[in-house]
Image 1 (cartoon, rainbow, N blue to C red):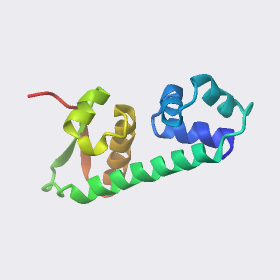
Image 2 (cartoon, rainbow, N blue to C red):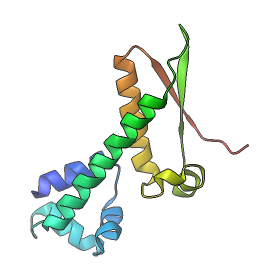
Image 3 (cartoon, helix red, strand yellow):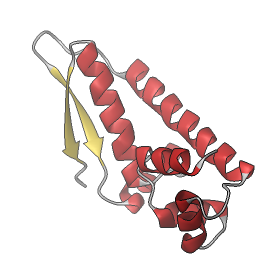
Image 4 (tube, one colour):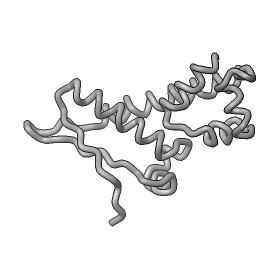
Length: 128
């Protein structure tokens, strides 16, 4: 994986430099060196990010499959979590993702539903 690919995939998944550092067991500075091209991106890091990309896409497809088509003129409401803790508490199936990555998933779902002429409204999750 090239440095620009790493940065593009990282940002496209809503991950920070610190997120990637934590996932790969390195210092944040090392991730910065990879993205700058100062150090080569190890294959294991590229493979890990590509696996995460597939995981995100699988979640998108699963969520779209589970959405019931709204009645004419209706809409679908998607809940966005403000913190990782809220996400992990309410959606333990997504324990390996951050709230930012979940926001990326919601946006991908929203775009796909729009192509299907289904309106999706994203609102913040509220504890009841």
